[in-house]
Structures are given as structure tokens and as C-alpha cells.
Length: 238
Image 1 (cartoon, one colour):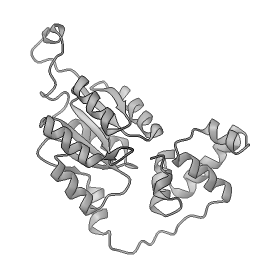
Image 2 (tube, helix red, strand yellow):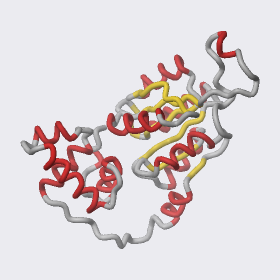
Image 3 (cartoon, one colour):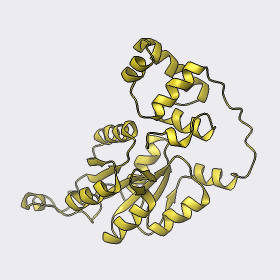
Image 4 (cartoon, one colour):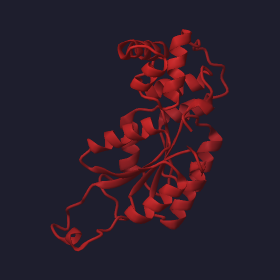
């Protein structure tokens, strides 16, 4: 179903005016403690006329508070949060509001995670390095009572026990340093200052890292590097 779900009601008298067929944008709360990713999602939502980001929460505690205040139609929930497990948090939020749609995001997806998300009442499971259009589709169309999983993820799960044939790219020491700092959520200006290099040199290292990893964004490069074992999962800014 395209547009706002019936779970969100107007909060003031003006909301009841106008045509009965007029439907407002779906409201979305982003829950992720990785600052760079949260900002990217928030910015993407701002360009969608049928979606409105009502805020960003960096913890489960903040998500509970903001859900109580804003009563969003959709919550985008990261699995790894600083104060707990995102799937447990999703189950708690859905129990409080069964009409809430929760899109769970994770850098690492396996069959156990998919089962946990389904039991928690999540409506969609998306890879954190996936395509933006897939995430937007999950926000718009995934419905309570079912778990929408992108076919690419299902294919990966079915073939998870096969030995990967893609060689791990070789990064220079400087490229690895830049990659680790990207994973920690640092922007290019901070990285260039900490490494005592110019901002243009820093951009060149990032461009090289993206090319070697076959990534289209800094976030996707971090996730690919984590999966390839180039950096540890604990380096991903929380």
C-alpha cells in the first residue's frame, strides 16, 4: 500500500480537514547509532514526497521516547545499538503498537537473524549495504503480519555455505587507515586532519578504496570490508 498507513492519526484538529481521500506522507523514525548512515537515510527520506522523517534515535531508550511522542508509521531499526539488540527493541515497539511497521537493517544477515526478525514482528529485513530503492520500497509497501526479504538476500542465505570465490582486495596501509576511520563514523575533514593529509588526498584514498571494493558509497565500502575481514565488526562506530 502506497503512502501513509491508517495507524497514524492526526494530532490536532487541522488534520481532520480536507478531502476524505487525501492521504498524508508516511512518518518514519530512524534508529541507528552510526551517525553517517543515519544522516544518509534522513537525507534520502527528505527527498521523497510521500515519506517524512520525524527524527533520528541513536539508542533503544531514545527510540521508545520518540515513538511515544511522534507515533511514526515506520521505524527503521538497526540490529546493533549501543544499549541493546535492535530486534528485541523491535519486538517491544510492535507489542506496544501492532500496526507499527519495523524495517530491520543489518550488516550481517543469516537465517537465524531472519527468523528472529520474523518472530519480533518486523515487516522487512534489509541489508545495510543494500540499494536505497529497496529500502524505500520496504518502507512503503511492507505490511504487518509478514516479513519482506529482498530476493537477493534469500539467494545469499541459500548459498551461504558455499565457499566464496571473490578474492579479497588488497589495500595499502593508508587506504586501510582511511577505511577504519570511515567505519568509525569520521568525516573526510576529520580523517585528513588526523592523518595529516590534504582533503583532496583523502578523497583520492576514499575513491581508491571504493573502486577496489566495488562499492558505490562509503557506507557500502565499510560493510563490504567487514564481510571480507579487512576490518573488524567492532570498528563500525558502535
